[in-house]
Length: 285
Image 1 (cartoon, rainbow, N blue to C red):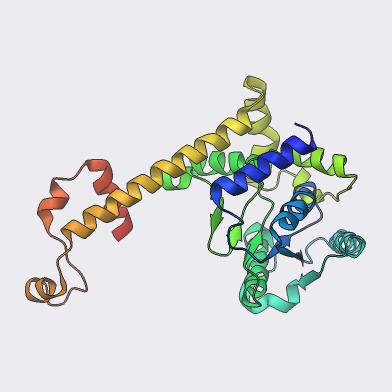
Image 2 (image 1 turned 180 degrees about the horizontal axis):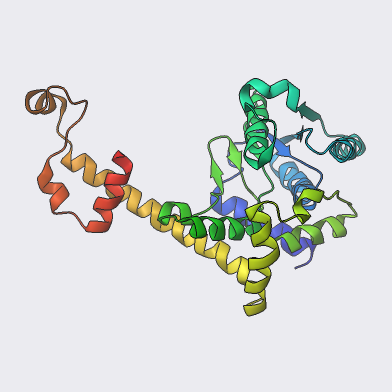
């Protein structure tokens, strides 16, 4: 796809998922990598079309020394050139929220989302992150390998309260194409090249192997996640309806199970479809 086709794809995805509806001010999570630079390139025209203000948010985890500072300087230069407001966070500012030890992917993720929560608390409508369909494919493989159900197989959702993922309809190759078309460079996190983390091993080994079977493997895995998400939402609705039918009202609960906060009649549960019953029990647990 060329730039215009990619932009139209993202525009359609945002419209279908209602990602930008009612939004007045978004924060873009920009690390300086190709995915986040593509997010910047694509969201600027889409925000302009809808009159949405943009702020850039950059997190310096402090884990990579000089290269982390290089990334911060790169993002500062880009925002200054484009005239975009920028919020930069450093690890020391958020130690209370992110916790310790100050190392590892899990800690870095907690730190990022602690920063995003601060941005949201300041009145931003939502934070847009640069997760792509390639990330979606890796997430699915990772969860299947560790063991997951339908809910986990749905992968990364297009949105959740306070967060948007408008690039889930693209691959990593698409984001690099966007950057080249816009004349934007990007920085590379050297830790992405190492196989220290399981996700990197999937990225470097499993995904290329699947692409050798089918060039569209990443897109197909991401499409499966969409289908799993719709199925999961259906079972969740059916489970909620089942529990609503089976639930005893407050007076009946007080009479039949005085110490219980809630209680359910067995008959509707026993007569339910096993898959819906499983979903209902999962919701209770």
